[in-house]
Length: 200
Image (cartoon, rainbow, N blue to C red; front, top):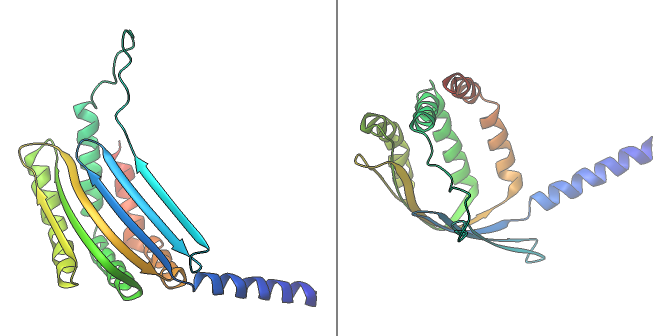
């Protein structure tokens, strides 16, 4: 029994020690027609070094094939997605909870570089204006924290485009608690229920 307790204690201490070692993450992503992203992770002082180009190329057109190309997403489906986004963002207390999470992460995450340029739009200009109004406080908060963020609405077209470049250093042990508290919070549970109802 004592040996098992000692083994568990040593194993737990090893996990805590590993989670206390900083992780460096470099992200470089851009979306216009398709998402193009590259990321690089370094951990344990370079012992773990992972590079991941993640480009999503356009599917090749097969010449002479009778198989039709994928039809565009139905308007009804796009409207449902817009309803889900709006329902989530309107959840009482969610934006304040997100702001608390961002504040906690900023305290534990070192941003050596961060640049974000994004533009979005829905089929309905009214939906675009609502979402932009709900996101504006988060953009202001990010700018007050010294982040280089630009977010603009597209009222004449729908879609999402933008680019992000970030170099992040973080100790996993410091952020696990913040994420768990966020995911288990009441506003997030209410947002999940709102999203589920909006799907119907």
